[in-house]
Length: 625
Image (tube, rainbow, N blue to C red; front, top):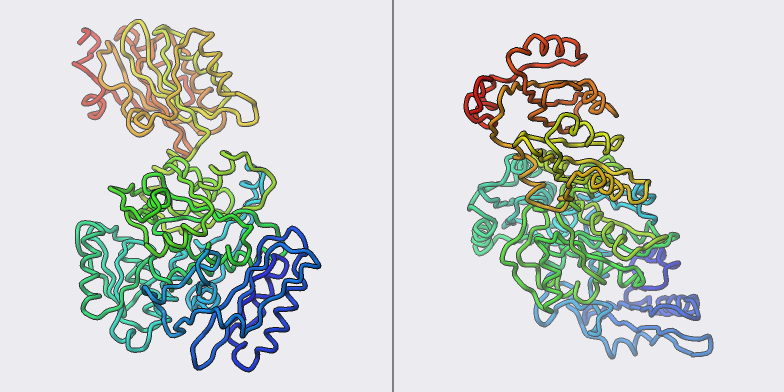
């Protein structure tokens, strides 16, 4: 028997063996049904559902009856098993796939009953996967004003949730199917989940990966799969690799789809079962789920919306790979022309027709996030859980944060799925650059005169400056690129800085949302210039709060600063490149000045890179070329 009821009775689901209530125990099932009917709240209750299973020689029957909001005297009672059977469709209990005649139906849809609850409750995942922790995010909770929990799927043996669906699919294959082998196409987490599942079940597997797959991912798949798995590198992109995988399937191997398979969906749905089990005595308002092809989103929604329908299930996609959002908007599965690859674990051009069918009926809302919001979510998860999530793995947190800020939600309980932590190390620099949502980038024009450089910095001090870039252009004005972090607990602090800059006749523009500036121009600002008598020096100073301000104070000289570049890289030493216009007759004074500084320095005037990219002409001090 499967019985869906109010939140306080949810724990009972896990204390029943659904398969034990078969023919011969109908009487007991009827007593239990009456008990739960009598213990449901009497007024204002959300619609609930009672479901009965009966197995006999005719197959398995499933039936449902919605219990509407009722009063004590309404007299509603669950139908008898025989009454239910007369109205119930037969479902082939041996079928693990669906077709036009036996397609499983979603429980809360207007159509007849679904089989997903049974598939999820009976999913075979825990021989390979672990029940993951529901961890409270202390910092996120404080920052967002809500009770935030992280469902740590990144702690699975393959560092992602994919092991659940992959193993459940393989564990339900017949001995004959296992003996013929399985095939999968993936360049990421699904491949690792299939590889480990195949090894545990001693099943021959072929995993096709595109030629350009990073070697670290290829090595991980081979490590998880061992001798039972053959990794085949084929094709210049995913579509070509998928075509090769289909060839193996046509030859008799079983294809393990990453998302559009009922058993894979059911395996991912066990995440929802664990969340609700851990929240039996706790309020729960929202669950935010990463969405690529839709397998995890569909599975979680299929379970949660049957057990606790008041909980909102929100799908989160990368803005440049929003296949589910586009499909739900159109009312049909659509294929995207192209997808962004930053959140590569969720970059899918075409979602599944089965995942779409479930999500269309059960998912409350979709939300999309951009690259900067994903990077910020990676940083937020590190602050709370000390884990570096991959971009797709941080989608749930990014969507949750955006949703809360958009709707002004306070005081509610939310869960975000941290779905994976297979981060490519080479991406960390980019993530670090884009992760700080508080950083503001300004383009400022100042007078080209001694002292204006220091005057500008004094306006921004004591705020943390993360980048300061300048190159001499002409004798009238100088263009500065500077980024800093406004004080978070000071209202309108950034606006106050802008006002003070304008009051001092510094023309400034906020380019914090300018993608060209953030991606390219900040690394290219300046360029070649004709600067007479220019000498270039590289300084190192211990990085600490106020270190840059102290360095600028010590650089209080009469010579003009023609070049300045500083970037906070999180190192223990700050590194500054400085150009000074020093005539040859002042060479002795320059040496004495440099020796008086308490900083390590090197002269780089003859550096090849400087001469090639930053100098125009000889600049030998005797001409203006």
